Amino acid sequence: MKRMTLLSSILLVPMCLLNFKAHAQNTELTGEIKGLSGATVEINYSNNGVFKTDSVTATGDVFTWKTNLNEPQLISVIISQSSYPFFAEPGHMRFTGVKGAMQTYKVTGSSMQQDAEAFANSVKDLTDQQNLLSMGYNKASAEEKAALGKKMDALQSQKKNRADQFIASHPKSFFSVYLISGRTSYGYDEAKPLYDKLDESAKRSVAGKNLAQKLQLLEKSQIGKQMADFTQADTSGNTVKLSSFKGKYVLIDFWASWCAPCRAENPNVLKVYNAYKDKGFAVVGISLDDKAANWKKAIRDDKMPWTQLSDLKGWKNAVSASYGVQSIPSNLLIDPSGKIVAKDLRGPMLEYKLKALLN
Image 1: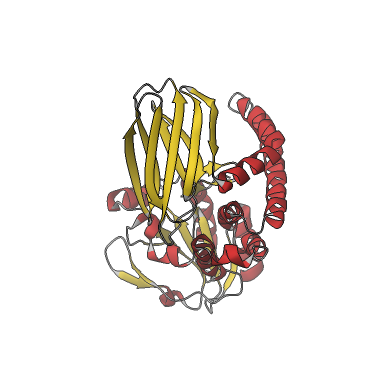
Image 2: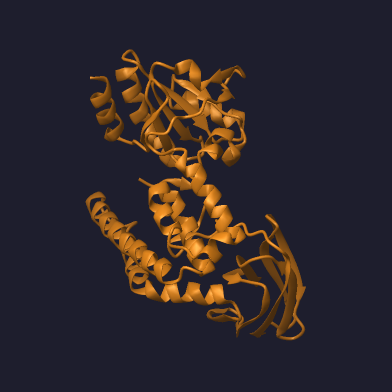
């Protein structure tokens, strides 16, 4: 099942996982785009964690953009409403091509972009196969879609294996840090061994330190860890503590009204809740909504009778952030002592787990 994430993707991993902060260094990008003819060029980037858009006007077919970037990061150059993303870094870079012909665009002077292109070339055969399969997906029957889905998953698995190989052979590369950051959405067990392969210089970078902090959060949700007590408000504004459910198996369910996969999963949770609510099982919903009306309407529409909590801060929800939740639906199952015994149980897997625990 699809999961809603904070991140859009490029190649294998999300585009916006980088948030680099370090000592400012001057960065200059010289663009030479045939046919630009004095047009305005926009550049989207992050400066000390703040998203910015700069506009520069070309002189003929040439433009120059200067800023302070700290470490390499993904930026987007927008020409005539067409966006071209690439990895920029401190120093001088050149951006060349023909206006309206994105396939001609080329960036030089960025070692991270060079590594990104090398990786893209290493998985091009798999990407081409994925694109070919996706072309026929919408018109396929349900049975054909299931078969296509399995093929897509197999190709994605191969892509991940090649990413692992790239990281192992490029332990100092900023792009390796970027690839591992993308893998944190798959969980601590998948990302931590890759992080351990990085060179110390990459780990000491601000991007590497951010990745280490993210892994520390994910480690908290490992099976066998004790879940810390927390307090949030329910739909009536009353504060509820997790510890008030001590003595029961509790499913901490991270969801949101705007998350279609979450809403599709809610009937499965409702079925299990009704079957086991009198046998020592409870559900606590943690919503990543930021609008109370939408949150409450979804609860009514999906007929969810269990405790629902939220601080209405969206992706900045204090509980989800403290456990490194990056995609939803997501859940943690804790035992009567508050220890995590399972995670991300969906569909029949939740029922199977509870049968084993409660029967």
